[in-house]
Image 1 (cartoon, rainbow, N blue to C red):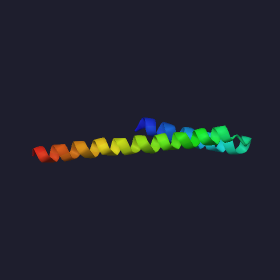
Image 2 (cartoon, one colour):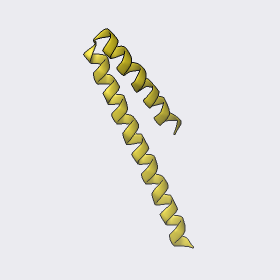
Image 3 (spheres, rainbow, N blue to C red):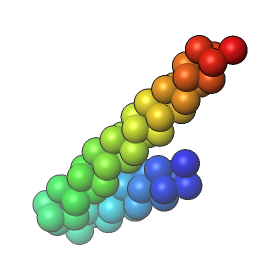
Length: 59
């Protein structure tokens, strides 16, 4: 979960900096960071959900 929160903070910093400096490269990179954070969160949820279902089926 640390990686996801790290990506979200970098997203916030880059999007603000990109808007203030009018750099579309930074804005685009920040949106890429946001997409990465969402994918990481979804994959962590999927792995956790699969593990909990597997443990329930063993009982």
